[in-house]
Length: 180
Image (cartoon, rainbow, N blue to C red; front, side):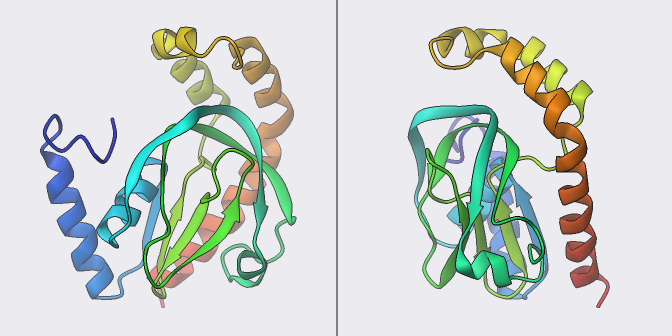
């Protein structure tokens, strides 16, 4: 689903209202994938279809601001993450881009003091990746020219332990924002 599909998924309006309220009150927010897109929309940015889908393992690169941000400090300047999206968003006004990729320039955004949007997935497991491939076989058929499910599974075995280490660091740091 896309953030711009409020007519098909009416609950999106309620999600955006909830996020706007949280932003107004400086509440910590961590949006992943669709959650990042909802955060961007709630903060006033446009969300739309990208030129190409990003499904599988791709490199993201931290910006200078991302390298200094408390959630990401100590992570490599460039690291591989799991992606499954075709939509993207602009940077909301008074927000910062903390990471980008070759296909999508806005991979991590920070809105205000405590709201983060990650376009990628640090929370995936091997089982989740396998299930997503099985459940979304029609979507993968439409992009088979440049996305190979067998390669995704191979890359999952190679990258999953590292991404779990990064996820543990980022999520632990985010939880410390909640329990201040």
